[in-house]
Image 1: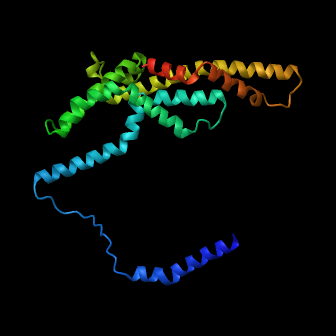
Image 2: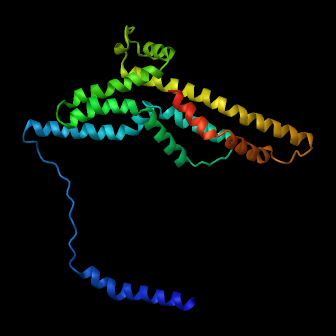
Image 3: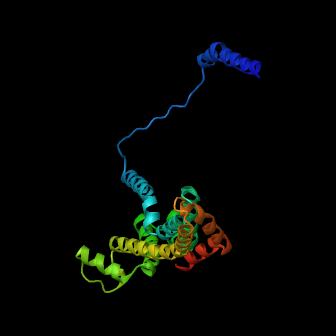
Length: 251
């Protein structure tokens, strides 16, 4: 084994001292990257530049749009409450929870996304409608989804805070008023479902703590004993199926 590592070391030294300088000295073409700006020659160039800037802006805000205007907020908070109730700390890891929340978001939002693609994205890519009309048509299904989930109390709050006139129909409510009302409603629903998830795990913790105290085992952490029972209960009732089913039906 020692001779093997000595041989590998000698090969590396030969490469760096004899082969590498010859390779670096060879005339190897490398691509040159240039980023420049030049004056626009016609109005179409200006319009194209503004469209590119607008698209880049939307892409930079895409994570916030995905989180705040879809079902992602409620789903990821419920899954976080589930992990906290189980007491498994980093199991499942954050990547798994976020990934599951994303796929459940795409599943629950599929009808909305299909309408956005049919009414806005596909016609825009085919050149049948302009950018402003595409945004308006893409916004309509998303607003419809948020109106189904938002609470009237939250809408009233943000309409009053914005000091806007009292809306007569849903079309009179601005999207900038609808989004924060929708978000706080999602937070409330997520916390309500998280509380219901916590109850059976809390009961197990209390029972285990009472049994340990009655047996005089005060130095033994109750969480250490209750964790296997909570995992066993979760497996026996097919917890993941129940949680995902409840999340999907809540929309």
